[in-house]
Length: 389
Ligand SMILES: NC(=O)c1ccc[n+]([C@@H]2O[C@H](COP(=O)([O-])OP(=O)(O)OC[C@H]3O[C@@H](n4cnc5c(N)ncnc54)[C@H](O)[C@@H]3O)[C@@H](O)[C@H]2O)c1
Ligand SMILES: [Fe+2]
Image (tube, rainbow, N blue to C red; front, side, top):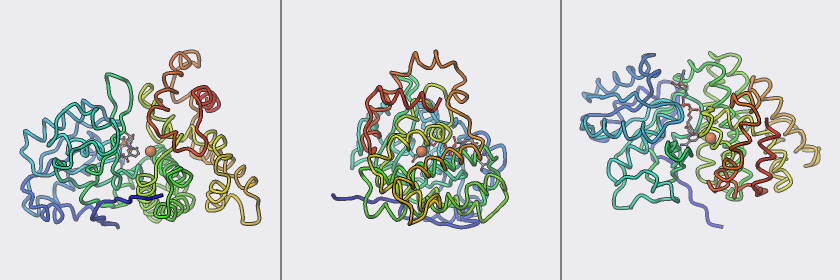
């Protein structure tokens, strides 16, 4: 099987990396930048630090802070209008996955026709002749890995689905990975985005599209999450743990974007679209039961994950290691105070059940479950939602 591997051409990693924003924007020959972010990042002053770095290099900045968590098509269109009005030459996506994904899609729409949904109809739908406007990304969560992926997830408000756009033009030219920006993440956010990272790495490793380029990166990400997530959750100011999680997020992103995500993400997006549950949280609540369901399709792979996480040793059989992994994932959710699916949705099971078949169908239609070690039917997906309830 051939494997294609794409990452941003420049990734700068380490404490203070975000202060390179001005120098990097200068390399683009930019005169004006549109910083795409959310209202919290603007109000807490972190966005201002990036503007200062740009100012030092004589680059003017306009700020669009209209990104909502789990961004919508409307957020992207508002940002696109702002980009055109500001006459900026480049974009910076600054914040969590929501801000970075919004900047990515503004970038391609600045040079291409609407509607946005046409670019979600399959991979690489942006014409080669019309690449997007150059953009830089600076993550403040650890994380979605969006800083290194050719993926953006945008909610289609008319159809109530999360569109996944997968396109080589969604790769940033520059990614600045500064773990110091993540020190302000509150524990619940640390937990949600941290489990998202683990799901990326595990799904990339067990996916039918796993390959020799992504395997070592996925395992490294899993090892880093096992060693650092709980510490980052318990001790928000622990620099070593924050740094470990920033690296894990980046590696998880590289792994899944060049392999794939699988059933957890397929089932998670409809929960986000209908109940506005944060992406990492909707993954986390599904992770133990979907893992248990999927192990028979790739017992050796899951056993390796279990051993890398320290849940089993080389002496344990794959069967014992797989069972230990499922137990560990549930215990991790409990330690990170992740609630059950029912609590996240905020509705009664009878109300959830009215739309569960649409959710299962939407999840399957996204294509992600096709890469899962075991490909479920609609009825099996419904059972898995109930198991996570
Ligand atoms: N493109 C990809 O490859 C990819 C991968 C996974 C997920 N996603 C998408 O990313 C989005 C989720 O992103 P996210 O989980 O990073 O969160 P987010 O961007 O939605 O942000 C969540 C909240 O955290 C706040 N926040 C961000 N950084 C902070 C910090 N350092 N301190 C305090 N608060 C901070 C934000 O202001 C916001 O209120 C979803 O839409 C999901 O679908 C994209
Ligand atoms: Fe994710």
